Amino acid sequence: MNELAITVIGRDRPGIVADVAEVLARLGANLTDSTMTRLRGHFAMTLICVGPAAAEVETALAALAADGQLLATVREVTPDGETAPAGEPYVMAVHGADRMGIVAAMTRALAEAGGNVTDLSTRLAGTLYVVVAEVELPPGAAEALTGRLAEVAAGLGVEVTLRPAEPDML
Image 1 (tube, helix red, strand yellow):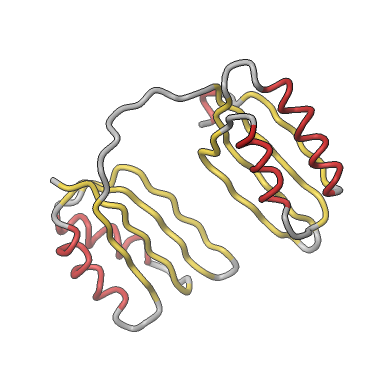
Image 2 (image 1 turned 90 degrees about the horizontal axis):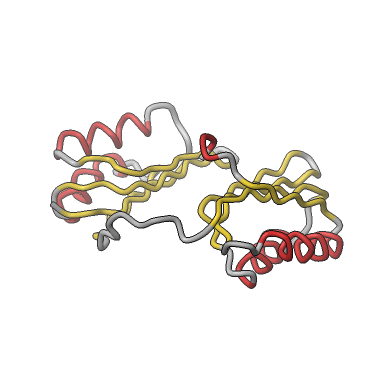
C-alpha cells in the first residue's frame, strides 16, 4: 500500500467531503489524517491516506474536478512512522487590528526559539485579525519565548498569549 498526500481546493458547495471520502473508500484507501476548512467561500482539504497507487487515485478524483470547480492533487509520500512529540505542546493566540506580516513575524519568533507550528488557523472578522497556533516548544523555552513574543506583538500593535496546551484539547 502507498501513503498518499491529497489536496482538494475550490469553490465550496455541499457534499465535497462526502464525494472525496466515497471515491477513496471505493478504491480501498484508508483515510488516516485530514483537515478541512472553508475560507471565504473556498473549500480547502488536505489529507493523508493509505491505499492504491497515486495515479489510480488521481484518475478517480478527476471526475470530481471535471467541471473545473475543484482541483485535486495526489502525491505519494514517505511514511514517517510513529514519532514522539519533539517538544512541549503550547497554544499561541494573537489578536488585533489586521495588518500585513502578523503571521510571518510571530511564527519567525517561534522558529527562532526552536518551536514547531503543528496547526495554525487565522480569521479576519471585520478589522480584527485572529491567529491560533498549536506549537511544540523545546523543554524550558516557553518563558524566554513569552517575552520575545510580547516584544514582537507590541511592534505589530497586537496582543499575544502563549499557554500550555491541555492534552485532551489536542
